[in-house]
Amino acid sequence: MYFEKLKRKFQPIINIYHLFIAILANIFYGFPSRKLTIIGISGTDGKTTTTHLIFHVLKSIKKDVYMTSSISTPGLHTTTPNAFTIQKMLNKAVKNNIKYIIIETTSHALDQNRLWGIKFDIAAITNITFEHLDYHRNYVNYLKTKAKLLLKSNISIINQDDQSFEMLSDYLKKRNKKFLKYSLINKANYNFDANKEIKLQLPLFNKYNYLTAYSILKNLDISEIDIIKGFKNFNLPEGRFEKIYDKNYKVYIDFAHTPNAFKGLLKEGWEVSKRYQGMLLTSLHKIHDFLTSTVYQEFI
Image (cartoon, rainbow, N blue to C red; front, side):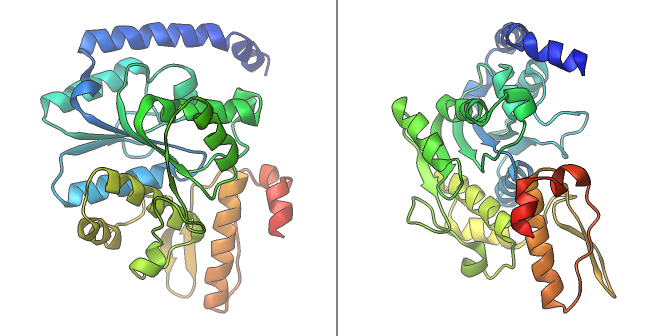
């Protein structure tokens, strides 16, 4: 506990160190992102599924693409790697004639300058809820850190239905940053409901992940036909509402570890149990944090 408090106190100095390392890494590898199409995905929840979905669609139409992700990048133990690791990966992508790189981007990496020098062509925010406040201290700091990705990007896309929208959009407007919007509820630049358009049976949180991916793919000039075809045969990443048993009863596992993610997951679990006239049994990681949260109180 003492070490963590001490680390937070000196975090600004640590961030300067990371900036220095990022500058060196970019110079050493020759700023490889300038030769690639870089897509950044950030948000409290949904980053991994959205990253994998975009990767799958591009791969399915024979595009040369690579991704960094919390569960699918061999040898990495953090969602967004350190500056030298990521610049080395980008340089390797250039040498292998890879065109598209999708980076699952955390607020910690943005705050610590690990992504300095990367030219983002498209960036999207899935959502911003009240998480990681042990590091960022408050929600406003957390939101401003997420916004760094949008400010770095040529094209920025945000979720009009998310609680962060008003604050985030005002923050971007004050900095003269243009952005696009997606929504399942209101008129926006992108209004794609996968359940209605292609007859999928997605929970609400995954409908937003598909919509985020759709918005990005449209900005990459991927055709509607190719997007829909890719969406239809996409399998969710491991541990993302993954069905592991389907005989006398159904068992799903999910990586949910925030109150917002638990809320969406349990709502969908409840709907599934009602469809099959069954009951919902749960085993929750971090169960104490969830049961004492305001989100759980709303859920019950």
